[in-house]
Image 1 (cartoon, rainbow, N blue to C red):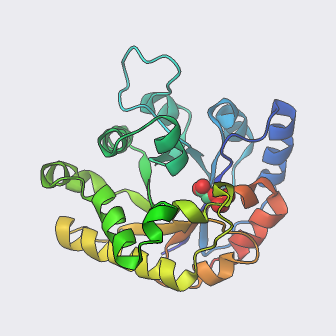
Image 2: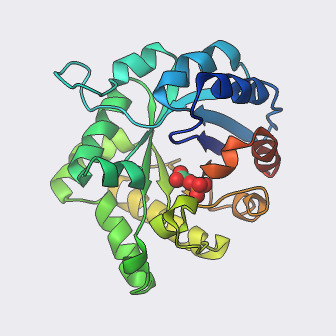
Length: 252
Ligand code: PGA
């Protein structure tokens, strides 16, 4: 299976001119055979990316949970699908925090994205205060995000079949300010637990589970070399096209 390498530009860059420059640099990236590359720019730049990028898939950073609703400020899954978006990030820790999203909201988004024929990238991960309580507390927290309640799970099992799960420990995200980094060993352990749990609860085969949190040109190879880790979600380092090329090249 190819390693999924997703660039999450978050709320960057500030201007259309800068976005065009970065997209042009992305259009020149060489995607190795072992990688599937995705660019998830901010919504206003998706059309620009669509016009120039022939070498990678398009992603979005969030979507609303309905295609038709009085929802000022939101973007519907149907709009994203129409633009050619293939992957939609849902439940990123920054979105959960800023929009005060509940697990329920996140799962509704996941379902809506999938029903519109795109692949949701469901982000889960524990905050620092939970990780400080130890590995078991972190695992419990992440599994709770995934298995919010049995009823929900039964409803959502079929939907999860095509989803990607991104394990992103909140404290390891470069913008979290903790300065801490996850080790590939610990990431692989949590990812195996996520995969095993989802396979046993939902009988999912072929579920992709990727890692995110301070992946850059120096750390990418150590995460991507792990057979348990199906890819990476890259924030800050993806704002430099040369660095993103190095990360892609680390896919084996
Ligand atoms: P980072 O962000 O690579 O800057 O740590 C990853 C993410 O938040 O998706």
